[in-house]
Image: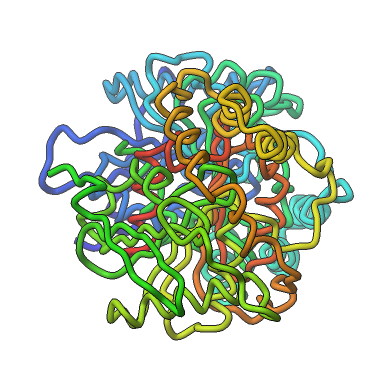
Length: 279
Length: 277
């Protein structure tokens, strides 16, 4: 069956917080390991937009759940939080797992979703198998590039004025190959303008967090993936993260891969991730 | 079925140079080359990976001239850079074995002749796996030269004792739990092979402009590295990723210069996946 956003979407009440997610499962196995892919919380980012090129391959091996954290996608528009975001989101993820009766899972998180996943691993280590993250934000300043990164101003401009033109500028920076941008732009624009989303956008406040202050406590084997043409999060931070995480490895896709390796290099990414998670 | 060195030992004479190699497994050819430090040889370098890779590839583990059981009297032809001379030897060996095209796995110093082969014989090159390769650029920017491990190689060459070999090996394999006496003894014994230390540099460093020539190279390359590499610091990995056009890079935290040994299972899976897709 062709997996679509519509035929995979589900919702669950996670301890009073509505969580919308997509589920796909292996057809030949009823007790496959669980993989929770947490979507980035950037303006208009959604779980389907992030991992639609991966769900087919991943769900052949894992019960795969693509999760929208509040207020992204179809998830809760009312819940608010002022505390550290990664801790708030860790608790949402724990409640989500409890609600679905999932004891333990592998985790994936891209860009701003990497922080919640890594924090979750320090708060609830027994509930994590292995971790994959793409280009985590929050690892501090580049050693080699001017800061803020090139993408920051475009992202801020789109947040303040969410037009198609502004969004196109963001995607020009984030996705290296022009032919891959259109579909991503369409999905993100639609989500950014979904009913009630912009009003709920500020619900989860919390100051920016530096992941380098807590990733030492991640014990789960971790694969960090990065594109060498990333203009949104500087790639040298991968090496900084690895010094703090003795059980980490980094895979860099070379020139021509930007901020979305899971999409820009989907086939290779899928194989790499499946192989790592099945280890 | 375990593969043994003795059962797979083979010899060939190419352009007057006697080469020893191990011919292991079946499938597409995968030529495997060891590094350039004292005592390096093909079997010891790649034996950990044979069980995982040989079911899928015809692995040819080749001792470079001056190393292992290959020719200790071979001299680089006058006027030919070392990397070019070695690339021609590889091509000659492939001719003799009836191999038209091969994948390459090249560790450390052997990366330069492997890349030279890819540039000079692109039709005969499949994909390339490089491990902690010598820098294709003239030098590193942030790492003192020579690296601490390279100094230890020199100290061993100056006075080849087991103690100095042990020090050298500590810098190859930083995790003490992985650095066995057997590993040190084998390397020491190989380094003391008569004629080796005198001849090992014959095809060594040569003027190379690989970085400029690689600009249009389309061959897919996977670069593997340990973040704790005392021989070629991880900065070299980043420069290699930037210099080799169609490349990707995998780096392990805590691993040193011998990731094929330190991370055997992950190494095998990555290499298989890369070569077979």
